[in-house]
Every structure is written in structure tokens, then in C-alpha cells.
Length: 363
Image (cartoon, helix red, strand yellow):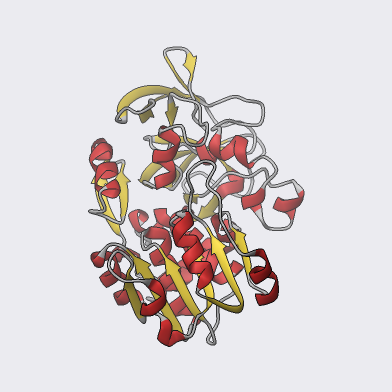
């Protein structure tokens, strides 16, 4: 079928073009896309930071309605509305352990934008282009998605707000809930207040953390963080973290989504004995941390990374929807919507910090 898609070419603006989309194969569905969030990951893929082959159709936070089933699909039906999250095979040991973010084939599905056999459902002028990004490639009017990354969505839920549950909000909330397992005794520091960091602030509030410290270089983001539940805010462009947080006597938990080695080292230095630091930000290639290994050993501190907040979308997205319905997840604070053909303006606004989470409306 003919579709409209935003085609990414290296270091060029997205271009809305006509492409051809194959029908769904076994284990896949065809989705008419309603909305799709824009994430920094999409722009990094466009800029070849991940090795994603170009040209490509990107987009990995899609919401839409199923219009066709591939062979063997029985868990979903035509007409159902779904959130499309990241791709995973559903069969390897990590998928079986409900940790699909660490799927053995994650790179193929998510970064290299292809099926396991190397194929893509999208072509243009008879030439295949990368079109299985995160198992969906949802910067388009229609997408072929793997059923392993689908979650049902009730018709009354606003699609534009639900898009970020597929990746950005899921990562921040999952890092706090699943990885750090934050609770009422914790003093948590959250470094970086974009979509992921602000989702972490909301999660820390839901978890009942004793103190929630939000750190960023943008005063407007810190105002938003405080409105969402931060008890302390630090503008690290004008304040030294150590003196600003001295009264807290250290952090029990820290979450970084900046990917900046200097910020990560500062976050680590603020941890109390046995404190834990989790990383979810993309760092420059070859970036290294400098940590005092003896200090690491005697303090009992730990540092680890996370993919998608260690979440299994099939269970975690419904949990986030439940928090949203209870009024504990004010997603409207994060989202600004744009018509699909304004994708380049939306991306520019996000990079400039004018908006937190831009979401494209396809119709």
C-alpha cells in the first residue's frame, strides 16, 4: 500500500514522502498511526550515532489502530487501538525473564531497523529502505509492527499523551520503580529534566520518596520539576551541587539521563554509603568515567545502566495507564502536539528546549 512517511537522510531535515508498505507477516500487524512522539533517540539515529542505515523511516512511540493481522496473530484483533513500544523477539532468555529491553536481538530490531532476516516492510521506488525501527517505524501514516511490542489502549485515552509511555516516560518511571525500587526512606537525585527525568520525578513522587532533588541547567524545567513533585531543585549552571545539597547529607539514590560524564561523576560523589546510581542517558562515543575504585569498594556504592527502565511494556504500560487514570501521572504537562507535516519544527523545538515532548498527529 502507499503511505506517507517522514524519511530521514543523514544530516538533512525529515522529508514527508510517499513510500510503499508491505502487508504484515506472521506475528505482525498493520497499524494506522494516530500519533507518534519524537524522542532524542530518533534524532540520534538520523545523525548516525547508532549505525542505523539511512535512508530510514524512524519513530518509535506510536499509537494507532490495527487494520490488518499477519499470520498466526491471535492476541489482537482488527479495530483494536494499541501503543507500540520497543522491539524484542519475545523468545530469548532475557525476553523470557520479562526483560525485553535486553533482548538478544535488540540491536537488529531497534537500532538497525530491520527484521531478523534483514528485511524491511518499507520501500521507495522499488528500493528497500530501513523501516522496522524499534519494530514499528511510526513516523508514517501506517506502520507494520511486531505483536511483541504492542499494548492495548482503551478508546477513551488521549493518543497524543499515551505515545510517551512507549519509551521516554517508561524509561524514567521504570528506572525509579523497577531498577532503583525507590521508597519512602529514599533521598533521590534526578539529573536532567527532559521527558525521561521528569517522568522519574513523577515516579519518585508516586513511590513516596522522602526527598526528590531535580537537577538541570534550565530554570523553566526546574519549575516544571517542582510542580510535578520535586522537593528540591538545583540549577547546576549557577550552583555547585555539593554546597547546594549539603543539608541533605547525601543521596541514597541517583538517576542520570544526561549522559554527561561530569554530571554522572558529580551524582556519584553525592551518594551515601551503599547508595545506587542508575544511568539512562546516551553519552558521546568513547566517553569514560573516572571513579576512585577504593572509594567504590569501601562505600558499597553501585553504578549500573538501564535500557527502557528494565520495563516489560506488556505489564508496565498498563500500570502507567492506571497511574494516569488516578491523576498521578500528569502527562499533559510534558506534551506539545504538532501536525505530522511540522515534524522538523517539532524536532527543532525539542532540541532548543522550547518543548519537552513533541508529539506528531498523523490525522
